[in-house]
View (cartoon, rainbow, N blue to C red):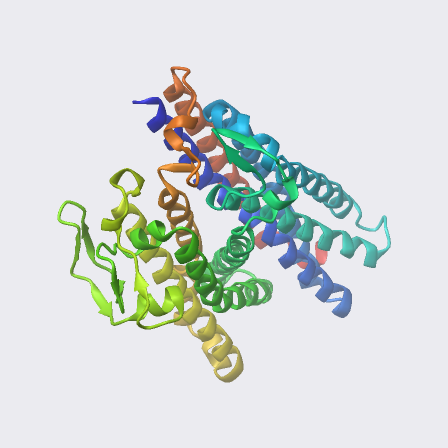
Length: 437
């Protein structure tokens, strides 16, 4: 295996795993503090039991997120030394601030986990809010660094040198807001539906239904709201990509010929040799409108870009279709939940209702992973858009494939460990009587 292929595979593999741990770790604290607040307001011991169960989940994902995130930090220097040599001084600020946010989160989590009956109840609850806010801040700062790779700013590039560095401008690059908004909503959607699906499954098994129904409502409320807002974020992101990275937009839609009034493709099989999409459904003029707000706007096609600057069209297109398709499904599921809770409460007594959300439990994370594939593969062949190619940033040292195998083992162990811990926590939750709290 070539060094470049091994390095890209290792980065992709570790990101695919880390993003799940990171998203759950940054979203679940909000579920926890809502349950905690309900216990403070009502004194209902069910909410106390739920809060203490969720805090254990937060602790598990905080630790695994820290481990997998630290491994990723080492990867940047190990795999992409040329990138880090030049990019480090420019995007060091978001990484430094992310480290500070991580420490704040760790301190607040320590107060929360060990503060029961030791610090004032309201302050104890507030430390949980700090855990959530610091976690989201960490995610936004990391996404800002990734946004810089898509929209480099904060420096002058002269004769192959990075001059006049402005870290603040790099931090607030043109892509940071759209990517951060889309990512945060995706994290809340994926985690909300995943946690809701786990509790829905326990309800189907008739395990402590009162507790799991309360847990389900908290989690799905967050997930449903985020899913309903996500199309707005997606529209903002699409318009941003159309302006800054037109080749990525063309790959997302497998759009080859530059033209006006371009249709939007739904589905389809990409034939990269013939440069066409078969068996697709077309919505007339929709791509022009979604990209530029004009039904007759011109959209540049892939044939107008140099061959060596075009990403893998099939991968980007299929990933984009998966992301949008699942996102639309989850939006409808969110509307379905709110309608059921408003007008059809008797559906909560029907098995079909809970089965819907059990089936949708992994959907948000599938969409989230697909979205990151669109972002990262769609930027290729650039590691810094229009500045540095990925092949020029990779380490010249041989044997990277063995590092890839090592990381596969490490992340597999992490995943098995987390699955075992969560299974144990769920069994404990179902078997511990509320009166024992």
